[in-house]
Structures are given as C-alpha cells and as structure tokens.
Image (cartoon, rainbow, N blue to C red; front, side):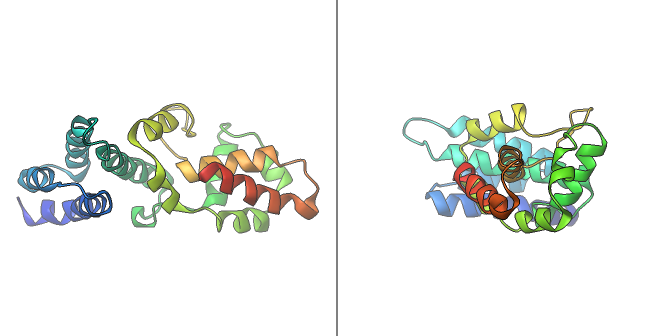
Length: 193
C-alpha cells in the first residue's frame, strides 16, 4: 500500500475500529483486507461495506451497525463533495442547504419564506450527527434511497439529521412564532431518537 493510499484509508480504518469497539465485534479480518487494498478510499469503503453486510447474521446482528457506519461514510463524502464543504465536519451549513435546494426547485420556498436566517441558524445548532449512529444498515439505506433530498441528477445533498429537521420545520411552519422554534426542536428530537 502506498503512503498516499494509506493516509486516505486512515479515516476508514478509524471508522471500522470505532464501530468494532462500540459493538464488540472482531473486525480484524476486515481491517486486514482494507490494509491490503491499493484503491481509493471510496472504493475501499465500498468493499468494506460489502464485507460488513455479508457478515450480518442472526448470531452476528451488530454487523448491521458497522455496515451503517460505512454507508454513512459514503453519504458524508458525497454530501460534502456536492455541497463543497470539508467532509470531516460530517454536516455542512444548514441554511446553505435549504437555500441551494430551494433555488434548484427541490424544496418549496416555504421554509425560506417562513423562517428567518437566524431561526434556521438556531435550529441548525440542534442537529446532532451522533444520532446517525442509531441507524441499522437497512434503515439507513432505505432513508437515503427514498427520502434524502437529491438534486435533479440524483446526487445526495441532504443528510439524515437534516431530513429530520426539515420534516420538523415543515410540520410546524404554521405554528405561532412564539412557540414554533420550541415545537420544531421537540419534533426534531422525537424524529431523531
């Protein structure tokens, strides 16, 4: 493995190690396979994801969370590339997402018309990327495939916790302004847990 490939794979290897520790899974074979690869990080992540999915079984159910974590890596990378922010942040600017998807006709203009930039910034602070760790693989796959906002070329822009916040904002958009943000935060909390 070249030094450049090794550096690119360090994020992936750390993701696998974290998931293995959290779920008490022996991921040594997976780690060994990843270290032997001489491919891009995206390709290595895809191969690791396939390995993890193939390990899911009645007697090894927690591999679904390892697979979900690897799929999240793909979603984070794709959203960061499409929205032009640093992937290490996991989530990009929420207002920018809403503005971009509204101007491209993906979102209704209601959110920008009914919520101020300051209100959106306050709600963005509630978005908790750690909640993504609650997903199993099939749940995350279905959410991403069917419900995350994509552009007209089907490129992922929206991430799971942003989807939940958008739903909460949409549901509560006509509530009185005095209590609306509180209600949005409660709805987001319920959706994300």
